[in-house]
Image (cartoon, rainbow, N blue to C red; front, top):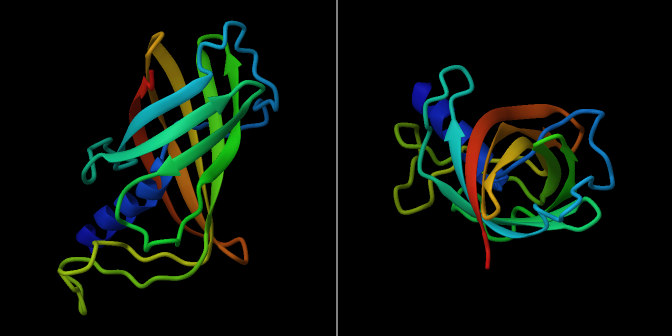
Amino acid sequence: MKTLNVFARSAAVVSLAGTILMSSGSSLMAVSEDPGNALTGTWSVQVTLRDCTTGAPMGPVVNSLVTFHKGGTLSESAGGTGFAVGQRSAGHGIWSQKSRQYRQKFIALINFDTPANLPGTPGFDPTKPISPGFFAGWQTVTHTAELVDSNNLESEGTNAFYKTDGTVYRTGCSTAVAERFR
């Protein structure tokens, strides 16, 4: 059961990678306060899935790309092998600045169901990618980020997966580091 939770959370944030940089709340604005466009641009992001209780890493780093657009919108493309080809859409969302922190939130569609394929469970196929399985619906990612310097940032946050009827079936935590693409 412990292995199932580790891989379930890992795959959950893989799509978050998409994994990445967000924070929920009513203070999110549609327009950025970023006066010098410090965050605007494309970033190479490495997401680490974490146990929400202990903060311990849960699996390998997942790569993704995030573009923060002037005006407070963002686009995200997640890497990783937790999803079947075409199963997860790119992420679309919003970002805002409050003091030295940036808050981001995005959503990605999960287009179809896939069964779990986890080591130590009946029917595990080692020739296929390890995955906790997903239901059609959507995923949200929320993170709060801070710039380390003009070309590097760090963030932490959460993710949630929803079935098409709106039922939450998986949540997780993650941290990320990112470098500006230049």
